[in-house]
Length: 279
Image 1 (tube, one colour):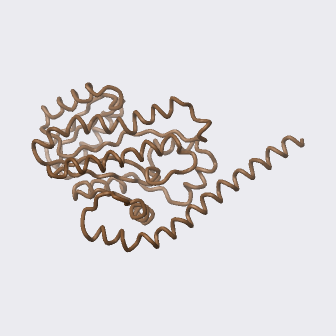
Image 2 (cartoon, helix red, strand yellow; image 1 turned 135 degrees about the horizontal axis):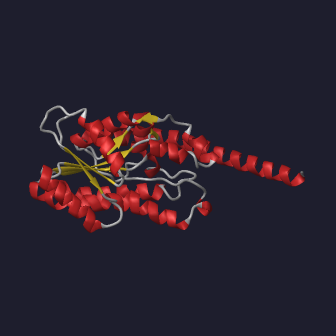
Image 3 (cartoon, rainbow, N blue to C red; image 1 turned 180 degrees about the vertical axis):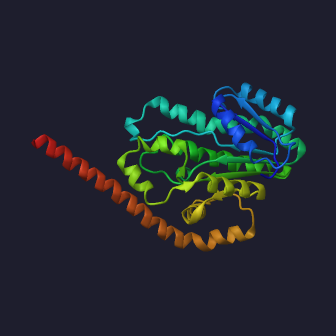
């Protein structure tokens, strides 16, 4: 809607074409082009590099790269298949490393660019059921912080987005296998609409904000987990300093509530197992 040329990279050709048609309906002029390329961004770096090179030859250099490839597996640590840990790290982490690595040299030459990493609120705090998923999203922050320090002198800005539970097909699929504890913890906050989250991410990326959060819970988490992450303005830094203490108190109440949910579920499960044995 802001006149950009779009390149979509994903595996499923049918979904790519559907998305292409949806995006084309929102084009603001006849010159805009929507290009689709079918490739798995998590498997072969050279292939990713080649398709991005082709895209830049057709549409010009990348001004903004949005890394949003991701998948999720939920379950207790001991119940999750070992290969799921490897697969999630490949998709959620390397699936962002490879495209970013492929465009960074051109961005440095032009001394401009934006790179977005879509993490998750589960990349700000570890929760029951997310032992495979959370570490991959935490990893994106480490990558983003180190990369931002390298590229800032070149006028390139990195944004890490931490969306909450968002109403998408992926979230619906994940919800089918969530442990009870994870479901109850998730229900303590509302589910956001994808369009709302996308608007916030685009706005923050254009402005060059390092952190991108949605809603009051997201704002509080960003303050609580700011640590040594970059700030966009003095005002943002002052907000973190002033709010950190009170938000920590609120956060401790949340953690206590989550621990209570886990204990309650365990007691109910043990009671149910004991009753089954008695019968």
